Length: 276
Image 1 (cartoon, rainbow, N blue to C red):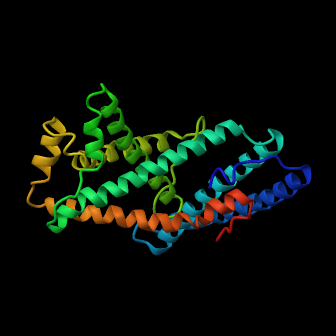
Image 2: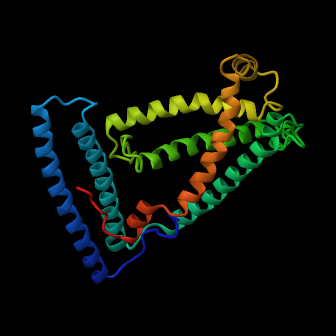
Image 3: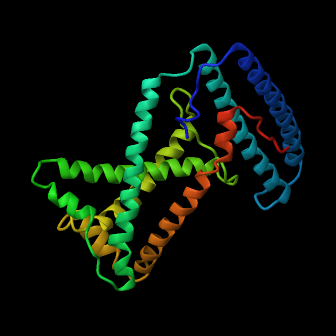
């Protein structure tokens, strides 16, 4: 979708029209900011707690405002690229498209591996094939190749977690928006995303060890994650349920991405509906 709606060269008339729309939207955001500032001052005079209804509504408006500002900034940046720079590097976009195809295949392999290898034991059945485990084991004769593919699948899963969290942060308004842009990243956003990566890394390492347990047999990670953690009396059933949670989120995300309202607004230059 990003390749389809990539910045393309536009004429001066289209540039002026879209810039006028962005200007009108910026005016609405400025008015919304003034209203929120007044409302914040009024709330400061009374007891403002997390359990106060007016405080929660104000916090929700702040999150909506941050989201709309980020979308409008990105619209303006893409518009300037389309007009002044004549779009962006086509080769770079085709490179991203190629990487997108690779990522699609990696995701499909992950889903198939979960369904073929990890789900049957939960229902008391035997796995028909080890699938990716057999593939990784067959590469052990070539130094580092098996480890490289293991790292590829693991890091791709971690990137999916980070990307999913970023997308959800733009849609679930009780989460703070922490964008990552080169040269424009706030320190708070950097710390938040670094902490997110650290927390996700442990979960991804545990899940990858479980998924590739035939390949990772007799390793330290197998001892820790498979023999110790999976056999904890209170937690072992939670891990089984989480497999269904992962597949459920995959299905929901797939159908939701087909719509992607904010991305389409952003790509086609439409006005963002500010609800203030």
